Image 1 (tube, rainbow, N blue to C red):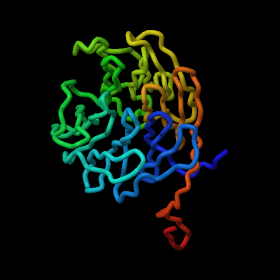
Image 2: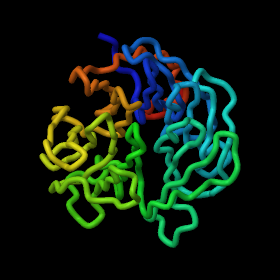
Image 3: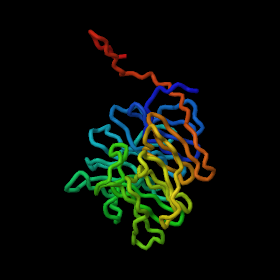
Image 4: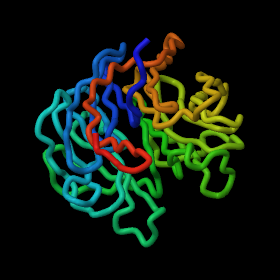
Length: 286
């Protein structure tokens, strides 16, 4: 058993590669676990990474130049390029199916900070394009172009068992008609919609703790796939084959096809610079 030595967040997966955030930087590790490789060493905080469908590019949100903006870099490591200049709160939520554009949610140009819409921007740069889908925080596509939207689908671990008007809701457009219908009615807060084959996977806390559930595209046959009891399942993402997520300080892998579920054992070899050790009469920076 590898000793836990980091707080791992915001995992993303493509094939056998997992990228996650720790110490406000990006790290890469195999889906089977192993030694983590640092990909960034930024001065600013890095969050919400998302690997491209082919696994060669990595989009993320960084604040290297002050504001939260969307960046893209090679998934193996290298120079990151800034793509947006919005000076707004943003989060990368996916890629276009052809892998040429990054999809992100942002509250740019909105009267209230809580209003988010979806945008896409080409990896070569240019102006972001507003997706005509109304208010939304997340989106996931089927293989034939169907869409499931998440509205108010923030990190529900920060809104535990919230049941008010801003609870997360999922809306689906199976036939690409542009007409969305509510996917499922559950007495809970929903997050992280993921369309995998003929089912929609998502996080819900309607039974008390946030866990991954799924249903068919018409909202039937509800199933629970994880059984976390100590920590909420958070920040789940998929490459349409595997699901990775955070629970507590650790990362986990779930295979929808086989129901295989396991912790990703990460050998985290950071020098952990900047940790402050407080003693009764002094503070040292280690």
